[in-house]
Length: 410
Image 1 (cartoon, rainbow, N blue to C red):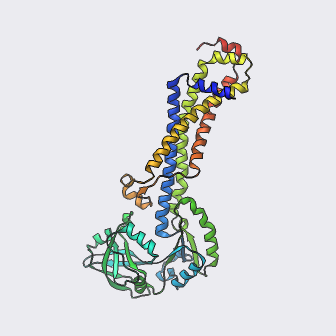
Image 2 (tube, one colour):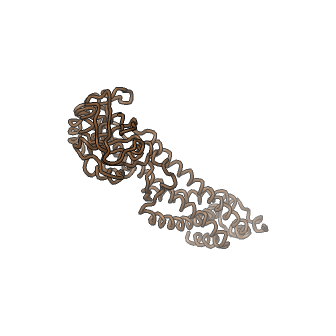
């Protein structure tokens, strides 16, 4: 076997320039596959973290809330009690949120908006402020006077920090109208969300629209990678059985099905590109191996005449193809890993997809990283390329007749 391996290695380098070009093609296929797979992992994690940060990993809602039209039918009564019950069953961070359709007005203009009052743990509040607060502050817990608006909404209403903001929420169960002071301006990746967002403390929103109630309770788990989401299923099933009547528990995929479908498309899309890369590289490997066989036809005839069987000739051709692909895989893999390591600190693609990215929850900063199966997948493509490219030349070589081969002239 060692002699066969040595002979195969010597054969592929007889025409150094042709072999180097083939190795380079395989190296590029491996490099781009590794890079795109790591980019896919970064996109998955970024979208996953953005989405779950805004809606939670799980949400408690009133059962059938999508079909309900009246505000009062969307309310979870005794939201604090339900939240306390969940606290006994899970260590997940919990956010109590009350969403109120409202008319928000300044001195001269008014706009319809979705008013959100929430109560979240300090670390989540600090993260929200870091990511979204542009100017001023976020209304403090229990603050009944302050309000924060999206920059676009404040601009449309011609409001600046310190200006009075008037809110009207007819058809609700609270006061229904109140005046606040603009204390903060917020920025969101989705311009449409920024143009309709207004934030109050939970206490202020409940006083305005629904005392003691909430429209949803979010559960946030310490999952930062999309691959960890598989742990969510058993947790959801267990908690759903323990909820009171009239309440449902949905995962982020059920809450945002359109964005969840993106995850189902990302991996097949990258694998299709990888198959195209390796398909083109495989054609070069096939061409190199076949031309090498043509040039060595008389030599192969002598080898067969001396007693080499079809199996030995086939193994030699397959080894040559695999050696070419392995050399390319080593070069491309090394360059790919170095590039991924160099870019693992993060880089921005906001200039590439601009405001469109915010609509789909795309991350502003990409942190390349490899998942456990990315390298095996890439090596599997390289191995399959070597085997498939060698199949036809190996059949041709194995069927050579010694006498005809030794008379062959290229």
